[in-house]
Length: 318
Image (cartoon, rainbow, N blue to C red; front, top):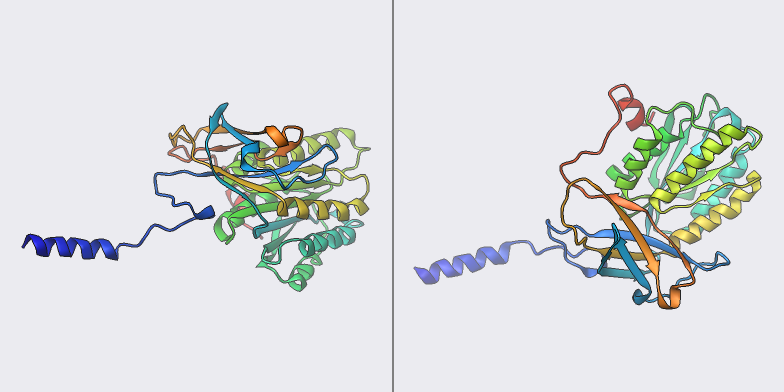
């Protein structure tokens, strides 16, 4: 009987599914939390630096150095949301913006999946995830320039879509707008937290009217805050024709990043915000590095969602 029980136990154990390897070949268990950072390194001339070894990177969480367990530098496919302002003030800019956005798609990894959101005072999912340039081009041509500007809501809904539908681990939002948000239900504060919880990098392009100084300053601060918090970058071209170059820059940025991963020494999943900083040493000490500024440790603390008044507007596409 003991032999029979031993054989039965061995059989049952053999039938258990093996743990699945994840990014970089590491095996993660339910109790393990790997924090993944996508880092861009550039020199004083803003050229990408892509040849640094792992030893050149130091990662800190709340000022405590962390052991880097994952290090890669390769072009991995990305899930991308193109979020384009469709308000009335964009009427004379959309053709050039559409051209630049399609150039961004062409310069991206062929295995990327992309969706298109056009927004004014509402956000419209005009193309779900695809890698078809023809479908993306058709979606960008769906122009209904009217109403106000609700880019907070449009970004919020796009982050929801990435969370629920994206098939790639690396996720990006590219936002193009020309005006101050004047119609969103979600606040900037809540959007910033949501963006950091999403782990998506948000790149922002502000085609701002500098003659409207106060509105331009407020919009500039908002776009910079969203980009900085998520490890993206903010751009403010003087002319719409410069968006072509910016789109190419963003596509190259995404394809030339380092992937760093660590298991936090603070294992508490308490919902608190953890500040993250990456420093370069040795051969990289004279370069600059950009990544997200932190994350929320997932736990019992729920992230603040939109109020009942704003729930529908801030979570669903039209």
